[in-house]
Length: 225
Image 1 (tube, rainbow, N blue to C red):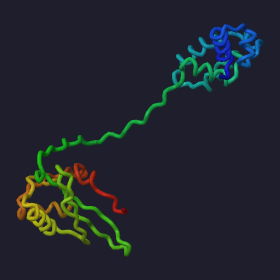
Image 2 (image 1 turned 135 degrees about the vertical axis):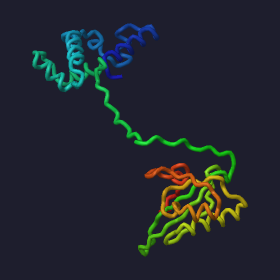
Image 3 (image 1 turned 120 degrees about the horizontal axis):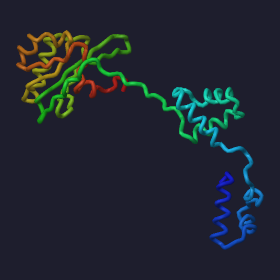
Image 4 (image 1 turned 90 degrees about the vertical axis):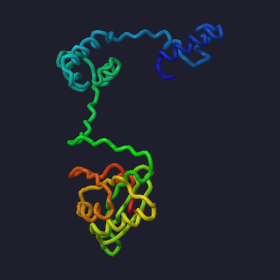
């Protein structure tokens, strides 16, 4: 309660609520009677507000600092703080433009729907470096429907025959193989002869340069953990 208007409201509340005179109400709430009866002698802001509106309408990209310069050039004796206060009270603040989000250059493919486990799997590779500096690759196989990690195999490198052998082992352990498996265009996966010929699984290839985003990208844990 700092502004004079708030103090006047407090005095009125004390007068009406406790049936006090103005003198006693001011004494009770510690408000001076001179402040209560004070009448402002400053010039009204209506002409300045109207001119500020006109300038802001004509110059849509000008903020209050540049509008203040224009007012001073026209002969208005007004400081920058007063222009800022009127500028905010009249709602003339400029709205900041939000940066546009980058849009994908290619249309996103529709995510396939599954109704049960072993209908669609997804496989991809993760990479890491050991403390000795040796690079390793980790083969990841995930069931898209259950989000279950079916296997993780770490080796220095994989060939198409290695991938086919792993799929056969997982299929024997689960007593089922998927109808479709989602893969990217890696060299191990493009060996369709060794994969499809030995397992009979239909491969659904992602577009060139597109990640295998349906499952592997969202499932991958942090290798630093």
